Every structure is written in structure tokens, then in C-alpha cells.
Image (cartoon, rainbow, N blue to C red; front, top):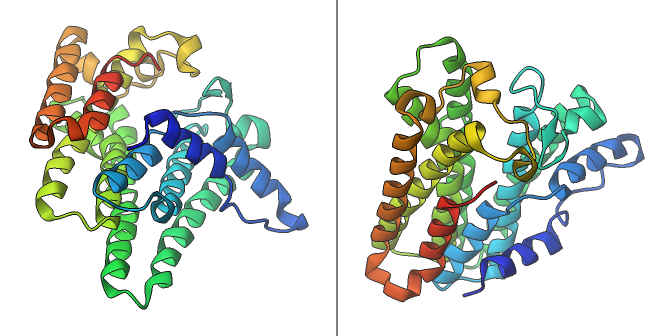
Length: 296
């Protein structure tokens, strides 16, 4: 398997390949879409998709469009999250947010453009495999996995609960719902989609789903912790937004020390889920460890 940095290099080299030229009349749209894609980012989600596909014996080249689609969906969600009607943030990845550069209307359209490009990509890829029903089914399953976990029962449901939670008394149940959907769904989707593209069996899907959900929830809990005690220069975004907006932050409800303990428990559980694969799953277990101690 490749290293995380190698996956990231592959993704960055092809990052804007699928962004269509909308013509001179709408050239500002492509500019705004590319701006938020190219300001940086971990590329965690697309790297997970490529790694999962390769782990199960699949082709990176075949999986790459789906990995790019995941990054387009993630970036669209960040553009919209930063809007004044949502989190109202001025910084993302250390740079001015999209609406600060291009205006609110163009930021909304840039997000829409990225989401629709992702949908075009994952629904178009299966059409290349009419002569191979098994492979075509694998591609359709992967496409559905990505779009459903990004949709109204997945990430968007979590974002909705996050906004509604600003006016509600935070509860453990509400926080869990937000963690599972706002964040974990878009980390689970690439893992499962990558395995599906490679034709992984149900047992592998089950074990990796436990892993993905655990690191996804852990990712959000650490985000909650970093919003309180992180380094703004490293994070590249404004600190203290959760407290300012009354967000359902795990650390507010359970305390910082409890949040750190849960972060460690989830990381350990994620690695345990892949124990049957031994050193063969070292990419994923090492990634879980690195995510637990990340500073941004």
C-alpha cells in the first residue's frame, strides 16, 4: 500500500481535473470552486477511499474519481458552513473563507457546483462498466454509499441538528447524533465506498465500518476539544466559535478530561476492530493514532 502522503500527492495532482469550464459567462464559478479546493486540507477522506480500495485489492485509478468527489463534497460543506447564516467564519485553513473573497452568492453557488460535480462524477463512473455487471454493481454501490451519507439522512442531518442544537439544552443523545452524522458519515463513506469498489466481502465491510465510525466520532470530539484549547495559528480558523454560538460541544457537556478519555477509547476500539488483519492494516491503525494527537 501507499503511504498517506503518497495518497495525498495523488489527490492534489488531480484535484481540479473534474472541475468543468462553465464558459466565459460563468468563469467566476470555477474560480470560486477551485479557490476552496486549493487552499489546503488534510485530504483525509479521499486518502481513506484510495487506501481502503487498495487494501481490498482494488485499483487506485478506478477509485480516484470517487476520492475526488468526496473531497468536493467535503469542501462544499465547509464553504456553506462558513456562511454568515451558518457558522459565520472569516477563516478556513488559514485563508479568508470563500464568501469573504467572492461574496455570499458566489460562495453558495461554488458549494452547489462542487456538490453537483461530485454527483455527476459518481453517477457517471458506473456507466463505463456495462460489459461487466459485477464491477458495475460495485461502482453503483460505492456511488450510493457516498451520496446517501452526504445527504439528508447523513451529513446534512447532522448539520441540521448542529444548528438546531444552538437553541436547545445539549444532551448526550443530541451530541452523539451530531458526531455520527455531521462528521462520522463523511469519514465512513470513503472507507466503505473504497471497499465496495474492490468487491470486499461483508465481513471486511463490517469490521472497517466499526473502525470508520469510531475514528469519525473521535475526529469530532477532538475538534470540540481543539475549539477550546487549540492553537488558532495551527488550526487556521477562529477558536471559541462553539461557546460563542452555543454549539453542542462534547467537551462542554462532559468536560475536557472526559472528552480526552473518550477520544482515546474510540481510537483503541477502532484499532481493535482491525486486529484480525494484523500488520496488514497498519496504514489504518497508524492513521487512527495520528488522528488522536493531531493539532489541527
